[in-house]
Length: 137
Image (cartoon, rainbow, N blue to C red; front, side):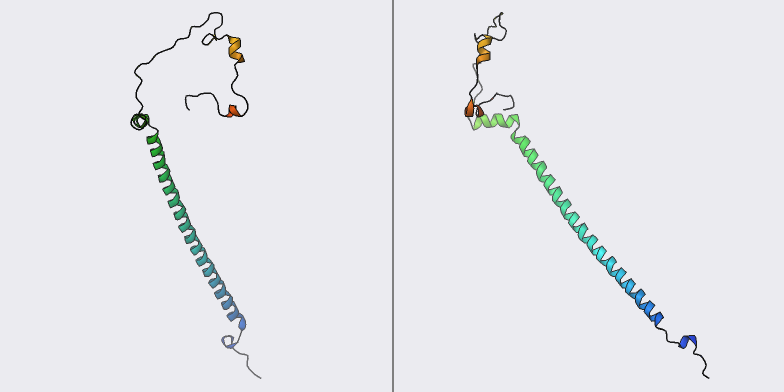
């Protein structure tokens, strides 16, 4: 009769299979972690690039706003009108006062209120080119 083999001498494939599966799991985990880290670095790079572009656009926008306010300053407009357009300040200013008729408070230059109401502006396509004056125009 043969004596049974000792435990350390037995060949069992289960230990080696468990070791291979654990090693594979560790390798897959390390690879996944590395790829996530690389993807995170890529996203950080893109975020830094977008942030830089936003800062450059904000700088350009503030420079354009400053230039716009300079071009619309009253002193610049006055200087441009005087030097380039050869405009001068008016020396003879006259004020025209219209006499209000007590019977009709809305009379303008001798017109009656009915005449003022009946006055119409241009009609048709010509009305596109006329409008009401505004202080902002």
